[in-house]
Amino acid sequence: MNGEMIERVADKEASGIRIDKYLSMIEEKLSRSYLQKLITEGHVVVNDKIVKANYRLCEGDEFSYFIPAPEDVSILPEPIPLNILYEDSDIIIINKEKGMVVHPAAGHTSGTLVNGLLYHCKESLSGINGVLRPGIVHRIDKDTTGVLVVCKNDASHQCIAQQLKVHSITRRYYAICYHTFQKAEGRIDLPIGRHPTDRKKMAVNLTHGKSAITNYRVLENLSNQYSYIECSLETGRTHQIRVHLSFIGHPLLGDTVYGSSKNEWHLGGQTLHAGLLGFLHPSTGKYMEFEAPLPNYFENLLLQLRKKG
Image 1 (tube, rainbow, N blue to C red):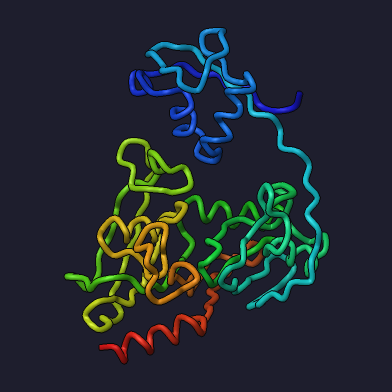
Image 2 (image 1 turned 30 degrees about the vertical axis):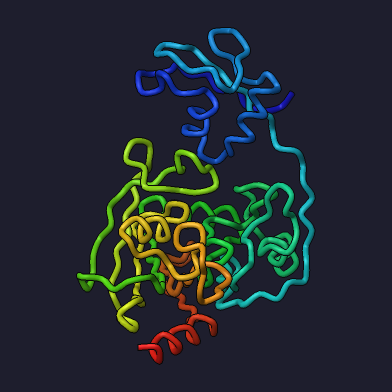
C-alpha cells in the first residue's frame, strides 16, 4: 500500500493526551475525524500494539501511524470567468471573487479557481503542489476577496514560495470589524494553531501554535461601533487576520465562525479584502505590486455604516 509511515516517541508534553487528539495537534493538515478513521482501520500503533482513539499516551511511548497516499482525483477544466489583473509566461494575478474556493478538496472538485485556471492556462501551471493545487502557491479564504498570484511553472513557484517563507512579500488587507480601537495602529504577535476542540477552526495557541504577526492601522471609525482598518501580514497562517482580530475583541463583520453568529448585515462571510500584493518577479527580479479595488458589497457596506453614524 502506498503512503507514508511516521514513527515518533511521546515526550513529556504528550503524556496523558488521547492519541487521536495528540495526532491532530501534530498533523495540522489532517482532520481529527480522518485521524480517528486511521486509528479505527488499525493504522496507528503504540508500543507495537494497535490502539483505540481513547488511548492516553505515556512519556516514552513509541508510536507510529500510516497515512495512505491520496486517491487519484480528476480535476477538470471549466470555463469559469476569471478577473485577471496581470499575466505573463511565469505568473498570473487574479482578483478572486467572494464565494470562490481556491482549490479542490475531497468531495469538492468543481467550481473552484483551479478549475477555471486549468481551462484558461491549459498545461501551463506549476505542478509542485500536485493535481489538486496546480499553480497554487498561496491562497485566501473562500469568502475573502482580492489579489492572488498563481505560478505557471515550477521555477516561478519555487521563487514565490521562498519569498513567502522569508516573509518578504507585501500583503495588505482591508477589513471592517466590530468596535472602535483605542490606538490608531498596533501589532498583534500571537501564535496560531488548531483550535483545541473544533478542528475546523484555528485559534491563538500559546503552547502548540506557530508564530503569527499581524499589523493593523485604523483608516476610519464608523458610527462609533465599527472600524475600517488596513492589515499587513508578517506571516501567513490560516485565518490569521480573522483569528487575531477576534482574539483582541474586534471580530470581522460577517464572520460567523470567529465572530457573531447573528450576521445582522446579512453578509456572505467575513468582510475581508486582499487589496495589495507585492513581490519580486521570478524571472526579472523586479519588484512588482498589484492592487484590487474594494468589491462593490464592501463599498456599499462602508456607505451604509457612514450614513448610520
